[in-house]
Image 1 (tube, rainbow, N blue to C red):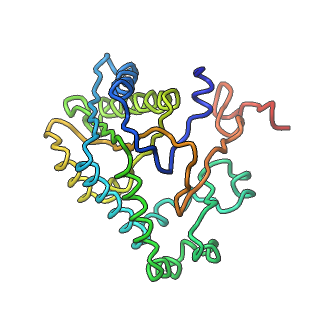
Image 2 (image 1 turned 135 degrees about the horizontal axis):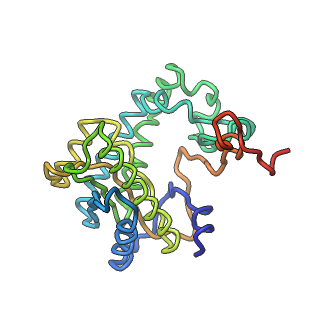
Image 3 (image 1 turned 90 degrees about the horizontal axis):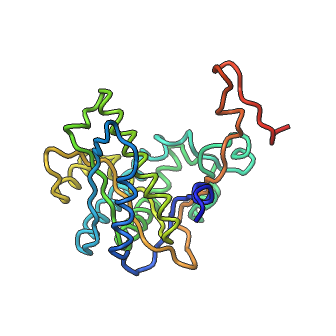
Length: 264
């Protein structure tokens, strides 16, 4: 795959993967391309855990499902990220950012405009939506053949310092290398975010993975080979829209937006 094609076709995989285990060759290819990312003074501060043990994946999945249900039932998820949600194509075209929620459980569709209200959050609880979404998330994680944990070495990663910033930047570039290579290998990838939202759950994951004191667990991702036919989750979105050039690029100083030749 050409590099520019890989960049423009990069996407998050929200649905199920094939049951086929990710080959050892491909697992090693992913962490090898991560290692080629730039880092300050070639410090290579990252560490990775390749998790393919079914019992361990099931335990991680239980935490993922439980935290998703908790975040939805408490309304935390919608309140925390409401500024990124778009509910019409017109709004998406105008804002050119965020995610377009174009799929919702049938009982919630009539309430789409009030989805952030306390009334609708309470309604979701009475309809069992948090439990349904939590179970969906649990299944998605458990049936992912590979989970990748990304960590940083605390001798390099010191929060609120330049070294900490450099480490975070480097890890982001390493993960992007992995993400782009997934497309080349026919793999899908998705960030497992909900356990990070609840500190006690994140600590639980650290214990589960035997993370030593000198390492900091930074992120989890689920991976697998993409199926031919994909079934969308109960709540799903599209996010292919991107801002026009003049909305994020400037010429010489921040006072002069770059002219976008595709926008008249």
